[in-house]
Length: 425
Image: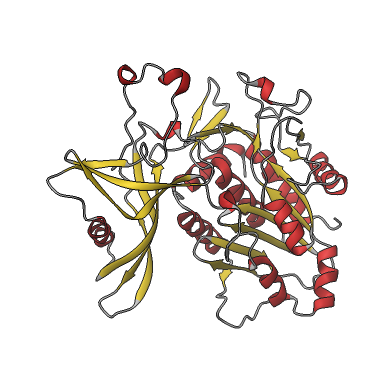
């Protein structure tokens, strides 16, 4: 796939995926079109060599794989995460003050909060409903239109705003939805929206809903050098890994896992620290000895975006480890195991990149700053698989609108596609 088509499909993928639930639906639709078949965890499985399959947990995590003739050569694994920092609606969110209808929100993950002000926001996620027949069903909802905003306080009322304004998560983030004579009936609003989408429900019982920026992803720069979008961390990696799996030739045992809840620690039934991957391995290779041998022959590439060196804040980087946008994917290294990379796995990644003539960079956080982490160390410690942490460099990580290079995603796609078919790891 050429660069232009690749990036256009990336833009469409992110635009269609305002929440982890929608991201998994977007992944499923592309897997279905590529001939993969869904398996339910509650069913017994019958799989055939050479065929592609996937399973979904909690509608927000997904494992896709191609079944090999045997697992003797191990599994080529790629991992990413479907969630991004955002504002989640509280269970009893309605606020009514000065004739303004607002909703209370809870901050999910380590969001950069100031950019959320004065943006055109919409609302999406999962709603659990009761049907007229008494069944409990989950339905995805997306208002799509800008229905909310968080207005800034005017500088006239806060003269120190540009020097010292802080955001109180409880007081300053309630989202403005409209005006009216009465407090909003939020569940009634959800029911009406579902009916507009053609879903007949008797009662809305609960929900997991997030606000998101309605501005579509777009190229920016004099020569379209950059791509600006919400949720680049980490839908960018999900998309790249998915396209690499679909494009890879059959034969090897190839697997993609995209899990939820990375931004809040991954400790959930559908998170990387949960049992989803180990349970999948146990079902496909029930013999303990064979499974342990399989793990020793496998490698995981943990794909999660990296911090590109910011030209206005260059002093926040180690001077020898400041990745540049559009100069290739980044190997992430941390001696304290915040990243799971070691010399063996980084060398494998570099070797594959050289075979594809793709440039590679390295990132090490400044020694006097703290280091974030990824699903890489979690997967390595939970499953025991050799792991390398990598990612596309970006600016403004955890902002409502992030920026990546327009060439780097395709660079990483080429590496992952070759990794999936590599005979020896």
